[in-house]
Amino acid sequence: MDSKVKKILKYVLSFALAGGLIAYSCSKVDWNSLGKAVGSCRWGYILLAMLAGVVAMYFRALRWRLTIKPIAPSITRMTSFHGVNIGNLSNMAVPYSGELVRCGVITSGTGAPYDQVLGTVALDRVWDLVSMFATLLLVMLLGGGRFGEFVSGWVRESFDASFLLIIALLLVAGGVFVAAVALLRKHDSALGRLCAKVYGLLRGMLQGFGSCIRMKGKWLFVFYTVVVWSMYWLQSVCTINALQGVFSDLGLVDALCLTLIGSLASVLPAPGSFGTFHAIIQFALSSVYFQGILAMDKVAADSYGMTYAIMAHETQAIVFILLGVFSLIMLSVNKKK
Image 1 (tube, rainbow, N blue to C red):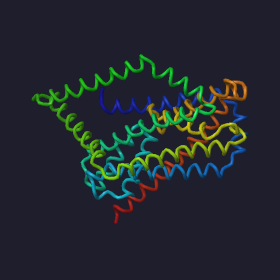
Image 2 (cartoon, rainbow, N blue to C red; image 1 turned 90 degrees about the horizontal axis):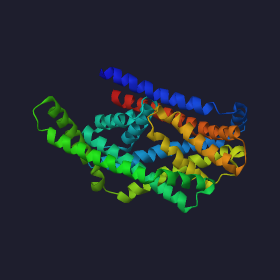
Image 3 (cartoon, rainbow, N blue to C red; image 1 turned 60 degrees about the vertical axis):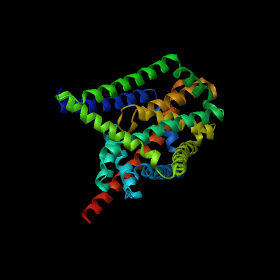
Image 4 (cartoon, rainbow, N blue to C red; image 1 turned 30 degrees about the vertical axis):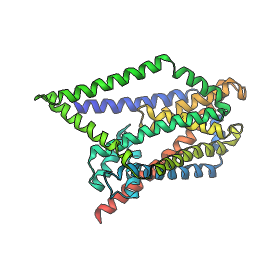
């Protein structure tokens, strides 16, 4: 299949996934109830949530900069910040493209090897997974709030024997793939040359990944991570308080649960998590509410879930767009200078 056709097909499938999930989620909503909830929204809290989003992205950039400095000592805070912002903007159009785009921003700004910068991005994503598991442990330690039963059930259902078997098979398959690439790269053939390029990329990523071990300020890295996830938590708290007439019975631990559940949406390949975030948040909230917190009917529970999803996701999307446009303008101005 032609590479252009593959790209077009990938984009079509991504947008189809997002559109399908949004349509499915919206089909279960009472729009009159949702409209009243949005109409009574306390917008000061929404503005605070958006500000928290800006702070989170800045500290993500500071954290990423720590891992890049061993391979690009001249990198500035703003260069890293621009890379994160433009990457987020790119992800809103094409899923996962932002990881590659932000590496290009750093490479063009510092001259650092692209493959090594890509390795630091891989480290950044791995650390996000570690943070998610730490958040899950914190949720369980704090009792889970209203979401305790839902989260506990999800953990029991997800981490069963079949799940662990799949993880083990994926690790084995990854090891076999790397070993095959290392052996075939020495062959004088088209496949050998391709494997040599893949091997070079993997080696560069490993070197970039290892930059975390050489970086100075490891505790500062942890501190930045705590700030980032605290800002995510604050966004959830602000959204709940903005819709106080709807979610008056949800507390701080519930907000942390929503932060954790919402972060899972980034795993699926939908542009900007459109559709995926709405579907998973709606499912979580409607499951909790329909199971008896307020003993409401399914339509009302789904409407509550979609109200939160729209207010949380769309305001954050606005933040990403504004920051991305700001960084594009600043890079353009600096280039002209």
